Amino acid sequence: MRYFFNAFKRSAVLSRFVQAFITHKFLQLTGRLPPVRWLTWEITDACNSKCRLCNIWKQKANPDTLTFAEIKKVFCDPLFKDLEILLITGGEAALRDDLLDILLFIHERLPKARPTISTNALLPDRVLGIVTALLEKGLCIDVGVSLDGVGEHHDAVRGVPGNFKKVDSLFDRLATLKGQYGNKLNFVAGQTLHPMTLPYIDETKKYAQKKGVPYFVQLYDEAPYYHNAGSATISAPDMITLADKVREQEPSFHNETLLTILKDGIIKFDCFTMRSFFILRANGDVMPCLRLCDVKIGNVRQTPPSEIWRSAAAWEVRKRVRACLGCANTWATDWSRQSDPLPFAKQLTTAFFKRRFKK
Image 1 (cartoon, one colour):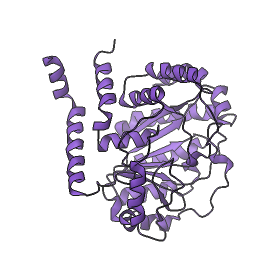
Image 2 (cartoon, one colour):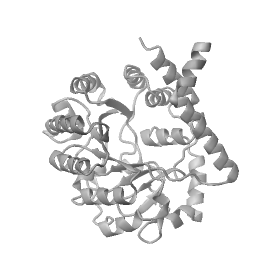
Image 3 (cartoon, rainbow, N blue to C red):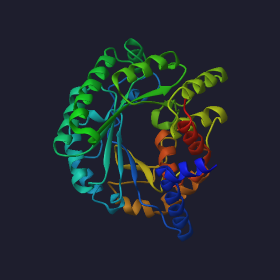
Image 4 (spheres, one colour):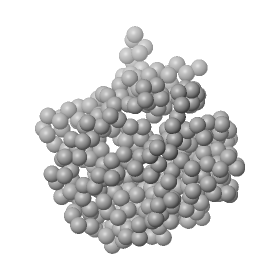
């Protein structure tokens, strides 16, 4: 018992757990909102991929996206002063010609915010150019690359022949930059867990290990954001096989969360969307999350973000979020866990001991 106590005492995770819990309870008692620490920004809804698990590419791209001038005005709003992570997604983020200028401005305005670019790697030269330029100026940057198989298997899932070769090249070039700039650059390979990708999970993991690329899996999700509602039904045997594949991954909070969802069908937690994070759509609409992305709370072109945040509409949506049955979204669960870890105590504890006693 003393060993377990000392292990927890030494753990930085426990310290963060306690701090987050106390902060949450204080804000709860005083009726105050926490600072906005995370933002998912759909910087464009245009997509150059043809993924079989997502239908964003089938939609007509909105030509009325926020301009650079409008973006400058938006991120000068005090709502973002405590921003820590800016997750830039799409569509395909690299399709924006002014992405580098946008990131440089945001760093100038919000130096504590670390950007993460999510990419399908179909424009590897542009992605690498942006990353290199940021690193040369002393900035930090993270890159998440979609990887759903090796070779033609990846191309079949993503719908574009030759996509894997571009992914492979991008990883090599990012590794070179990582050697130069260390922790200022992080990059990962992310694979979607779905019956379609099941035959490719082992080969994808081995490929990533051989490349020295951090690898993680995330559950297939159906949501209005992806325009894929009703696209797939996962059978009970497939759910069991998917869970087995998750158990083969490195022990982590993320993977324990996936196992809970695969076992119970859902995970209920205190979601902090519209409290410590939200989604900003390409046209400036403020929305809570992927599943409620059809719920518009306001538009940053028409109303300053801080006013939207304090509006009656925002408070009504927060009530709706409280009634949500839960979801499988990776960043929603992780950011909610960092805001209030108590609902995830089982997953956190299980992951901790699995890591401690891993053979």
